[in-house]
Length: 628
Image 1 (cartoon, one colour):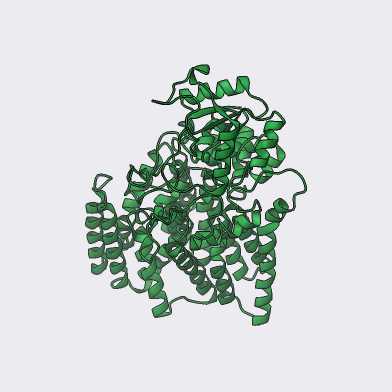
Image 2 (image 1 turned 90 degrees about the vertical axis):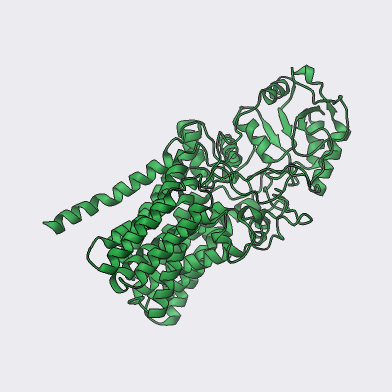
C-alpha cells in the first residue's frame, strides 16, 4: 500500500512542478510590460511582411535586422498574429518554452538516473533565479535552453542504442545556433564525449556516427545564414555585422568577438580608452566571475555542490556503467565547459547568459545528492550541505535588505539536517537537507515573479546592483554621472512614448511621406516609436547606432525619391565615446541636408537656450526634429 501511494504521489509530482514553474514564469506578465523592447519592436515589424518575418527586421520598413537570427522571435510573431500585439502575447512563448524545458529535463534525467533524481532536477531548474527572470522576458535564451535540453534528451536516447537520435541531437543544437548562434555550440564537446563514453562497438563506427551528426549540425545551423547571404531580392541589412552579411555576424560581433572582445562589428562599441568593456556587465573575466556580486545570485547557489559532486565522482570512480558514465560526462561536461567559456569571455557578456548552465547544474546537483546519500551519507553529504549553506549565507549577505532573513534560516536548517544525518536516525534527512539548498533561490525566484518586467538586462535579486562602471554608449560621458545597472528591471521597459515624442511623431506623420520618421539614435529610442504607433519609423545604425544602414547613399536616394522628410536626432555635439565613421557620415549628412523644425510647429518645447539651426547634431539622445 505504501509503495502504491508513493507511486501515485510521484505521478502527480511532475505536473505540479510544471504548474509551479508556469505560475512563476507567467505571474503578472499581463501588466503591460514589453520585456526587451529591442526584440518587442522587431516582432511587431516582423508581422508586417514576409521578408521582415523571415529575416527578423527591426523596423517596419525593412532597413535593418536584429543582431541575431530570428528563430527566437518567430514564436513571438506567431503569438502576436494570433492574440494581437500585447505585452503578454510577446512573453507567453517564453513561458511555454521555460515550462517545456523543465518537463524535458525531467524526462532526460529520468532515463539516466531514475524518477526521484529527475523530479529533483526539475525542481532545481524551475527554482533557479536567473531562469525564472529570463523566462519572464523575451530574450532568446528560453528557447536556446529548450533546444539544448532537447539535444541532451536525444543524446541520452542515442546512448541507449537508438543511434538515429544522434542526428536529432545535432538538429536541436543547430536550432539553438539559429537562436543564439555560437553559444549553442558550447556544449558540443560534452555531447560528443558523452556519446563516445556511453556507446560500445568499434571506434570507427562511433566516429562515423559523430561525423554524420556533424553534417546534420552544419546543415541545421547554417541554412538560414546561407539563405540570407544568397537571397536574391531586397532584404534588411544584417544588424551587428561589419559588412552586411550574416556570416560576418556569426563569426564577428556575435561569435569570436564575444570571446575576445575584438570583433564587435557594427552592433555595439566597446570602450577601451576608459578601461571599460561590455563584459563588465558581468564583472571582469576570470575564474571568479560565476561567483561575483553581479553573477553569483543568478546561478551559483548550487555550483559549489555541483563541483564537489563531480570531484567525488572522479576521485572515487563512482560513475557506474557505460550509460551512467555517459550521463556524468554529458551534464558535467556541459557545466564545466559552459562555466569556463562564460568565465573567461572578454567580449560582450551579460549575467543572464548563465541560464544556459541551469539544466546542467540541476542534473548534476540532483544526481550528486542521490549519489552522496547512497555512498557518503555521513561524510561527503553533510559537507556538501554545509558548503552550500555557507555559500547561500554569503550570497544573501551581500544585500541584507533583500530577503536577508533567509541567510539565518539557511544556517539553522542546515545545522539541523547535518545533525540528523550524522545521527543516522531519519530516512527524511535528505529531504531536510534540501531546505537550506533551495530556500534562498526559491525566495529570490518568488521575488522575481513579482517583478513587472525582465527588461533588457534581466537579473534576479535586489532592484539595483553594483555599478560596473561607465556604460558604453553616448549617454556615458567620461567624468559625468553614469547609468546604473538595474537588476530585475521594472516598468514597461521604455515602451511608451513621451508626450513630446507623440507630438513629434504626429507632426511627422501629418507632413511626412512614405517613411514617417527616421530616428538617429540607438535602437532603444527607436523601439518606443515602433511599439507605440503604427507609423513607418526607422532607426539609423541598428542596435547601437553604428551599423552602416541606412547609408548616406541610401539617404540620398530616399530624399531624391521623396520617401524621407523628417529625422529625429540630437542637437549639439556631446562628449563621450568616439563615433564610428558611419555615424560621422550620417551626422554630416543631416547637417548638410536638414534644418531644425521650430518646436512651436508641433506644440513642443525647445531645449533651454537652443535656437533653430544651432550647432551640429549629436548621435544619441534624439530630441530635436529636423526637416530634410
